[in-house]
Image (cartoon, rainbow over all chains, first blue to last red; front, side):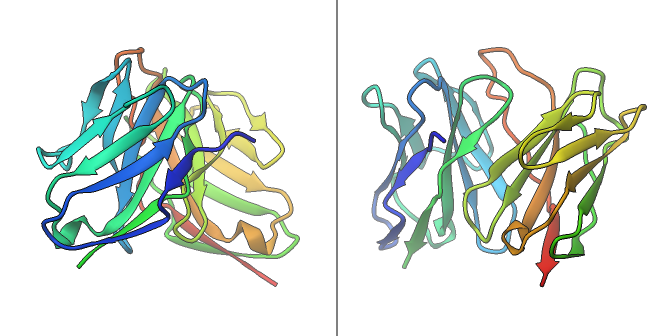
Amino acid sequence: EPEVTQTPSHQVTQMGQEVILRCVPISNHLYFYWYRQILGQKVEFLVSFYNNEISEKSEIFDDQFSVERPDGSNFTLKIRSTKLEDSAMYFCASRADFSRVFFGQGTRLTVV
Amino acid sequence: DAKTTQPPSMDCAEGRAANLPCNHSTISGNEYVYWYRQIHSQGPQYIIHGLKNNETNEMASLIITEDRKSSTLILPHATLRDTAVYYCIVRAPRGETSGSRLTFGEGTQLTVNP
């Protein structure tokens, strides 16, 4: 079965540092997403991306966050100046149509 | 998207059928019912979805009531690896320019016991 691949699996960063989380969506998919899950809490939507632009974002996705599809395969989430409360699992996802969304295994971000 | 209500937890014996209920009494005519699961902080995994007819695939069956106000996910022969949080999500198909986010609730923690 096709997979969404995320790297790294675990990232530790110091507060105030920039971090980039990387994802390789499934190759023929057109819609891309980032979600996050703080430990013990619900999975929360951050942003969706289609046709090289953000199509929807949540209130969590403030100016500290940005997304990019720098080439035909990668999809990245950048956090400019990390805060302790950014510590969470970050999930990338993609889909080809509206029926099924495929999620990656996540990057655990720890801000110290 | 319509709100869903699920029991917080359920237990099931290994090898038996697990029946997970979901209420979505405010569902609209064009909204689909989706089920995802999350095994111990891994990425959510799609299970099945349906509009009004019952659906079956290799993982599970989805039974939607005639009035569409509730549904049941059935895992016919639960195994220990089915222990996970199961999410029922109601969502309408969106156009190409809309993000069509998935809104996850608390879900049901299913524990399959040996």
